[in-house]
Image (tube, rainbow, N blue to C red; front, side):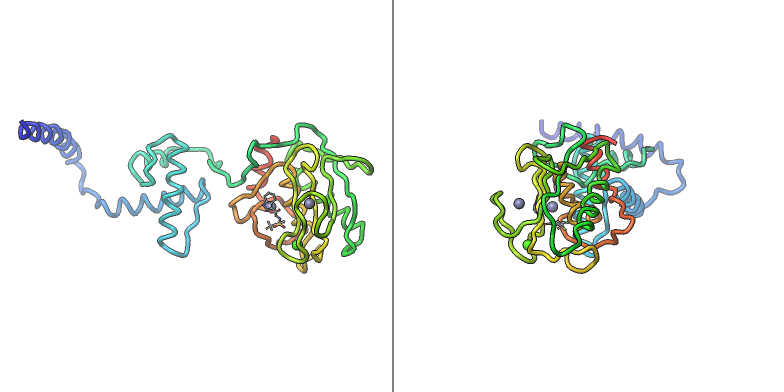
Length: 271
Ligand code: TQI
Ligand code: CA
Ligand code: ZN
Ligand code: ZN
């Protein structure tokens, strides 16, 4: 009985194989499997670079792991069998013509996706830092707000007294919200996600040496980052994003919001 089944299955397998060989016999040479894999691998990497923010890593092993992860993301997106392998369904899908917009972004939201359900959103500058002329602080924080309003339908209106949605101030150590600052270094500032009360508020650590240049801590860059939080963006894993959780100085003249952050704010509020 067992043998009969074996034979049967061999027959079933053999038939399509034979047809396949017969069909392909007209082809001049069968391409070597290895080189097919190589070209697919190279073009798959191009594809993942373009649409899944894949980047080659220094370590081959790390590249391999990242490659598998990105393949899985892509398979998930297209509802393919998620194998992490460059199987034929996946290769076929990659060969299909498609629009040039990446499938995955790196921005993130807070859980529950809090956002402002009003427009304009009000802000108030409650105090200033002695590190910089008052006019520069006002101008810098306004510039940081407009970085976000320039690429979204959001508008910001300043209020000079009373409560505002986004209350901004400089403070040292304990300042009444349960998240005391820590003097020079470490935490530079923090912000609360959109909501009532502390929601949307932005606090800067007066313990830092605030600057508008590369020295000390650049107020503009930190403000853009914190306002991002105050509008509902959490950290991104795109190293180019302003919402990437590592401080890096970039030229702030004619500053343009990185694409990942533009995608993030537009996903939340529209274009
Ligand atoms: N302040 C942290 C931050 O804003 C506080 C924080 C940690 C946080 N996790 C959070 C705030 C999640 C909201 C949601 O990220 S920080 C940077 C950056 C800081 C860090 O002082 O460490 C900037 C402030 F990105 F450079 F690391 C501003 Cl730009
Ligand atoms: Ca600090
Ligand atoms: Zn605070
Ligand atoms: Zn942050």
